[in-house]
Length: 82
Image (tube, rainbow, N blue to C red; front, side, top):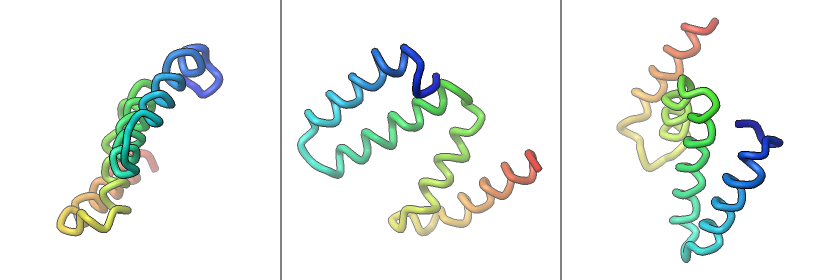
């Protein structure tokens, strides 16, 4: 799915926007955006979902114990594709 496809414009985007504005708190809205972003990218290329999850963990300060694991996953993906 690409950003200018009918599936995205007529189904995915309106559903996500409706859910986003119906949710009460910013924290829940952010969780929704992370989940639908992973869903969007998994629809197009599921191979990179693990890389995105590792990147999310790496960039979030709340998951410090998992930081090294996410660095290893990112390094592994880069070593495969380079």
